[in-house]
Image (cartoon, rainbow, N blue to C red; front, side, top):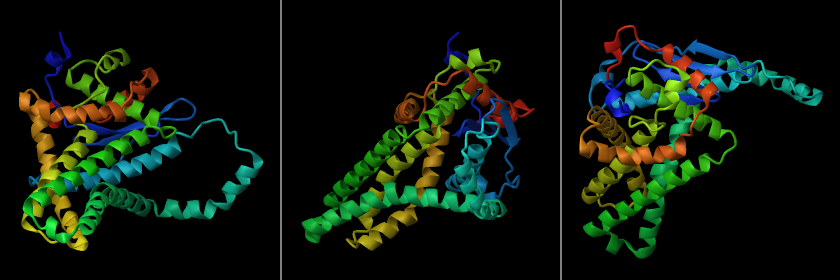
Length: 331
């Protein structure tokens, strides 16, 4: 029986690769599993607000809220996993380094007391950097080019469309270069392996097979409902929305154009989330399968094939969030 035949369920359970670990988000609980320095697997529940607001159920609004909550939760889990992964590791620190670490104890105490604040600020910084690099910078480059070639030519509608397409091309290029560059950073390859293990484990669970290392390893590391696919949809939708907006708001002011892009980000995020949900629910439809192909292709840069020990961590994280009622996590 093929994998496609077995995959009779689509789950809402999703995850995120951490430092030597994985966070899984289930319908009731969120859990993280991390391989410690001594080889054991640490498992703990990630506390989240159980209260679901009205707006988290409203189409085209819920996407922004869920994205923000996932950013905060994921950032906190990533920071914590870095600490846990070092626990139990052999102490190879020399005396001088230990003395230096003692001098930082005051800062460590402050961070411990204001941990939630640090997580919040880290999440905000991550979002601002993404907006700056992938949204504002391409527009700034195009706007400067427009100033150099003259505003008279840029006032034409067809020129505005072309400029927005060029801006979208730059945005896609920056994102692609980011993925390639990130893969060359020391240690990121391990993170990509955990990302691959997350996808394989979810695929095995959706197929209804027991979560064993051998079962999981035979599944694909590419999954259509991945955050990488979501980011691609965001960038693609941004081209369409910014182009349409540029046809109606033809100001050549660089400030107005940058503000317009900031204002439209929640709309882009909301629309992209609904498209991802639709494509995920109708992945047998030829058109939806076509739409998912770019996101799947990009996962070649954000996932790697995991080994057995990495899959064991994914299993531990997954088993902690599987609901008792099998209907609770249906996509």
